[in-house]
Image 1 (cartoon, rainbow, N blue to C red):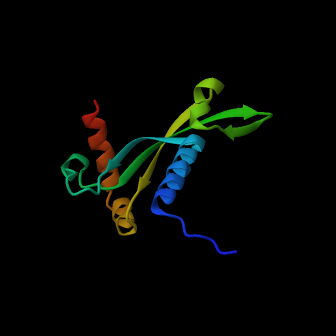
Image 2 (cartoon, helix red, strand yellow; image 1 turned 45 degrees about the horizontal axis):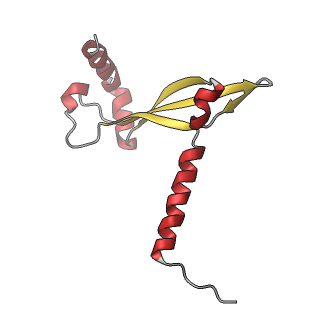
Length: 116
């Protein structure tokens, strides 16, 4: 049997259904994005430090001594425990410079001073 090609409209509907399904099933939430690689970012604020920082929130319950990560849509109903962590994405070429020149320490000092 020959299969007829799908039209663009069918593809769009399938894509939308797929996105809705993924949204419904996600187990983490991005709470903040800081793109310090962006050309518009003033690196004077961070002592020259540049990265992409993602704050990710996860929710979980304990069941029979095991951690179970729960879907975001279920967090309120299940009264999950939540945690926000930060993921930093850096260029490999910058990693050595940041570690060896104390650039990250300067950034932390500036950040702490600005948040006071």
